[in-house]
Length: 248
Image (cartoon, rainbow, N blue to C red; front, side, top):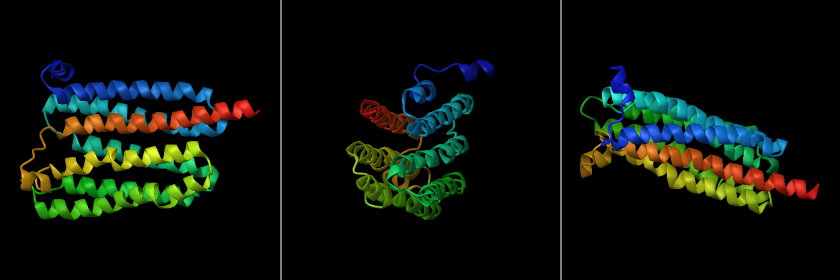
């Protein structure tokens, strides 16, 4: 059993991406933590959050890799535990980026609650679907989950987050918030697609799309989204810190 857990089949791309995702996000964590000392004090918390996001994900990927290699099954519970910790932290980044423009803690909590809402109902829809897959169960909890996603998406593009970014009169903050909004729109889209590929999901029942390789897409999307979020925040923090130094 020990050897099976540590052996990654060369013809299994899912196992390969579990290991690659683990290493990439752990490396990103080290980078973000070390780079905190290069930015001004007001941006250090943002980089700390970025590092925590990738570190938490890396730890979960370490265990998800072993679970997948041992069982060959989707590590659904471990993945949702990861998301329940990291996705709210990604939403916190929106608050931290717009805090200088007047973002309140109520905005932060609304984004956190929306993200937890999205994940809890997504987990119920995926993990507690009757054996064989019930479409009505999948659709009902999928719709409930999507409500949280729509709130975050609207806030980032047109709602409070977008308005605060505009109010900041800082082109760098406006650009960074818009890039993160694109991550939510495009990067996060893989998750509902994967959800709909599960037994009982619309893509599974209507088009026959299998959930067998959903983990492959989840792993790639996780690495891009989590590291990408952090790099956007890092780029903003470095540019603004350098600007502050030049003005001093």
